[in-house]
Image (tube, rainbow, N blue to C red; front, side, top):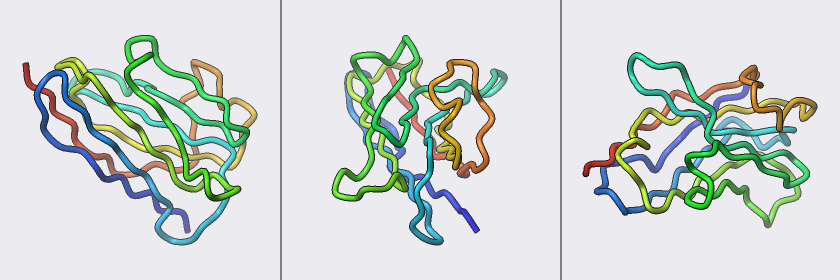
Length: 128
């Protein structure tokens, strides 16, 4: 059974940094696509960054140049996902979810929000 666990959230001031991690805690497997989403109360879940198993990435416009998504490069599989967040802004505040899918076919499509597996989320709070 796939269970995604996120960690690394916290409270920082604007301009600070955080590193989120997401791991399949039940067993190592290779996903075709993994992604980070975030959600603010009252708003729809927003896709922030995706990483396809071939290494290609895609970012939401507001985080380009500040966020970097990566996996464990020492492994030849995609089963861990990181999100390095720098120069954080108050509008980055939200509950950050990790998502994974065995398929990579629609991974880089901007409108694709259909992932097989989801974590419980980790809170990121950025104060001004």
